[in-house]
Length: 191
Image (cartoon, rainbow, N blue to C red; front, top):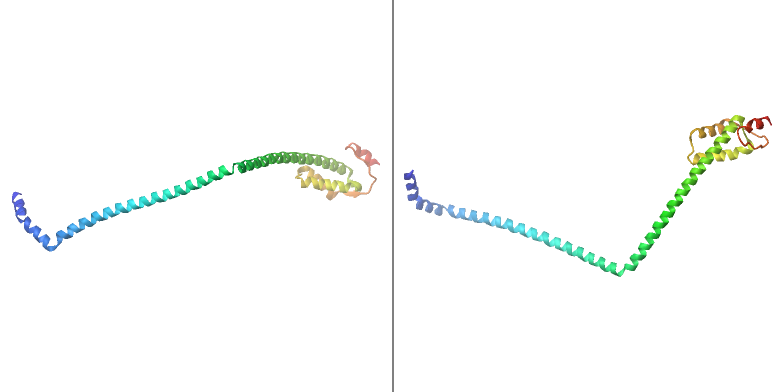
């Protein structure tokens, strides 16, 4: 091993001359220099990119600060306008509250009306079915009452009774007598 090292050390100057003469050494140095230059260039590009991002962020922040500054100016100049608008909003909220109360009242009225018309249509339908006909002077009122009941959302057994009376029973021209309840039907039929 020592002999190999001795040969290499003795021939080292010749090897250097051969590399220099062939241009290999300078090519090696240029290659290393360009690698370092590329690494520095990449780092420089990264730093430039980061600086651009920071600059853009600062510009956006400046714009936001400007908008906020304008907003603060507007607020200080328009405090009375804001107070007036707030009062108007409160008035609208109060009106909505009143409107909600009114809607509840209307719904209650509609439900009550539906209940009354249901009861009345049922009562009259029972009377007319027991009589076997509808008195002519009551026909139009019964028909209108039944239609109003159905249009208000009425349904079920009452709807069937109403439709049966309108579709199946005859309308007869008999003198009008008030029928107070189903017990009066017997007396009404006999007259």
